[in-house]
Length: 379
Ligand SMILES: Cc1ncc(COP(=O)(O)O)c(C=O)c1O
Image (cartoon, rainbow, N blue to C red; front, top):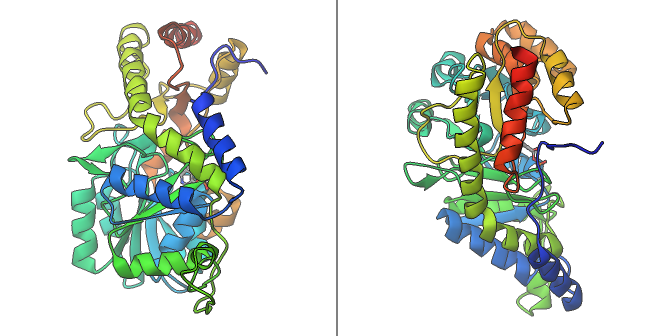
């Protein structure tokens, strides 16, 4: 379908083409100098001591859990209002995801109070997800973790370029994970990055990313090593040089792109408050600098959300839903029910939230079209 206003769009120019062409000409396609430079760029961009590029953020989250020593019998507290990969990463290790509620209908991030209420003697870690690139309340979450001896993992899939108190999202916990999936603020098609300041965690991630091997093909190619041992049950979660090259170009653009997103969000907020004030827009005075990955709004209570989305679609406007709560998916629901842990704010948000189009190339006129279309459906 040809959308008048699509939900998102990539931000590519001839720079990305040129970067890919250079890699193809070089003849070296995986885990080489370009990936090392991409990781160095991320260290400089975020201030993290270590950065590891991987195939995608799901792999990053899985490695993060393993590097934090999470395994069978452990519980990890995380939001249900997230993409399913956040919970799946916990399950891959044999641990149980325990779903916490969000803070409020304005702050759609995990609630520190809900985290507190779910801690047991099996709790091993807290996994936060910075919804839309808006920071979770990390000082308090880190304090709770410290008090109870828990690890903190950040699913910062939405948060490239976002920060809290000047500190990059993804660098507040023991380990942080970014996504470069096709619809993210910066993309390599598929791709992800892990950040950590902890040398021991970094060593585990490096080994587990590549089959549990002690040396890499690149080191052997450079003559730095001749052989290797396998010291852990590792994976092949490596990124390739083409994606790393795309990532380097995209990272250079992400600050400007995020600023453009922010300007569009201001216009949206202004228009919505005048024209359709019955729609509420979360994260009103949220602390920190968001990446504005998505623009979520809450429809008035009782609105038939699917009919509303269908109405927008008829007007050529693509909308989405972030997210169907994970605890209602079939593979998680039985376990969640057995724990009898209610998530009223997550439930209400799931009923009312829709995500409106947002991408750097979007025009002001397109923002007006979206708001006019909502006005027509609601007024
Ligand atoms: C919150 C969240 N976590 C994890 C992921 C998984 O990222 P990836 O597609 O890079 O595996 C995504 C992306 O789709 C996401 O939005």
